[in-house]
Length: 173
Image (cartoon, rainbow, N blue to C red; front, side, top):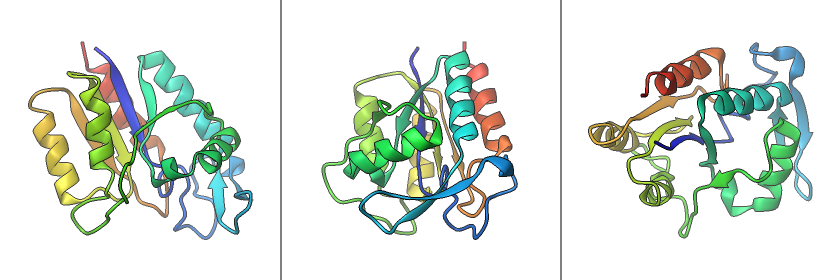
């Protein structure tokens, strides 16, 4: 069975709602500016390396599920600074991301990606999952292993999120 971890960037890897680096692995955080932009982001190479190592140990493939898929050079720049491989799979986005209280707008891309991998297990980390996104994950879980975790955009990805993800994938046969 293939296993995928869908990973958002802003709010998850980049705790953009935080004025200073989050406490988790605090010594490793730095603020960088995206090339050809005034957009500043937090990066943590230790966190990227930990994610990569954890996924490799569990046989899980990382997949970008972020609005940044619309700007591959910036996504690859961030990945290189964050300790993640530049060539990660990514959802495709053929229409504008539509956000509201019920959805983060990325579900069509996640669904499209998973159509190519029927029966695959998935875990989704995002700071903006809405009620329709979470209901879709719960519905999918009745057919294929599926879970999601809502991340606080002021804290970003924490040890607890990594533990939940590890427990989920470790529990699969």
